[in-house]
Amino acid sequence: MDIIDILLSALRGAFAPEAAVYALAAIGLNVHFGYTGLLNFGQVGFMLVGAYGLAISVSTFGWPMWVGVIVGLLCAAVLALLLGLPTLRLRGDYLAIVTIAAAEIMRLVYRAEFANDVTGSVYGLQQFANPFFELNPIPSGSYGFGRFSYSDRDLWVMILGWTLVALVALMVYLLVHSPWGRVLKGIREDEDAVRALGKNVFGFKIQSLLIGGVIGGLAGVMFAIGFQSVQPDTFNPEITFFLWTVLLMGGAGRVLGPIVGAWMFWFLLVLMDTSLRQALSAGYISESILSPSDIGPLRFAVVGLLLMLIMIYRPQGVLGSRREMLLRDR
Image (cartoon, rainbow, N blue to C red):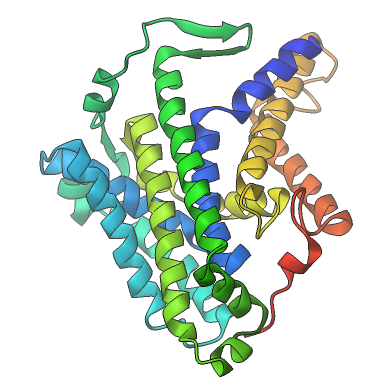
């Protein structure tokens, strides 16, 4: 096996457009859980409405792309209000139940036959981001070296994606280091004490859910632009648990935690995928033991095992501190 080739492939995966999408969505989840202690198990739902808000606006209604982006973010904001208003006055586990159920209900509704004229049903919507790619200033070709190379199209999406990640991370940094952010951390540690100081705990929770949800919607918009395609079954519950993996690996309650977690997650996934495929092709592993179709599930199993080890030996993640993981029963 070519070790250098494997490492270059893994590095390429760590900075690919998909990693930027996961980093964005995990930043929103970090606002919810890392700073406020909200158990959101349906972040993929915010991604879904963001992505479809853009796709439906452009494909179905023929609106400009910039309008579609605004619509996608507004849809995520409305979803946050619909989920938060009836649940955030109750214990935190109610939000967990509602969010995971809502995300799955929306996926099923968007793929239903009666929604075909609007959402494209199970086939989804395609080719709605052409105006973005028409603005690509990068000459056609491949950039990089060996396996660590990107097409002009991917590079253009990466520039947008990682720029958004940097801007959103900066915004979150400024927010959590403001008096507003200190109230969020107080709610995470002991919301009764914060309430005793005269703060509107419910109002701050709604604001946190709204901001994190809109960031998740932005990740969905970025996903839709990068792939020029959205299908309901892409936004399955597994994505939310991958985002939790990203957040916990990097460190909850740290601005850079979701970004580092996304790099690690995709580096390890691609590393395992490339290593196993090269081992199979070189004959180091017999196909009677491992078939090519088993590589996809196996790589997630290995990443899951790594997450278990991290939770045992460093539960705060790579960048986190143990006190940031404290979450009182609400």
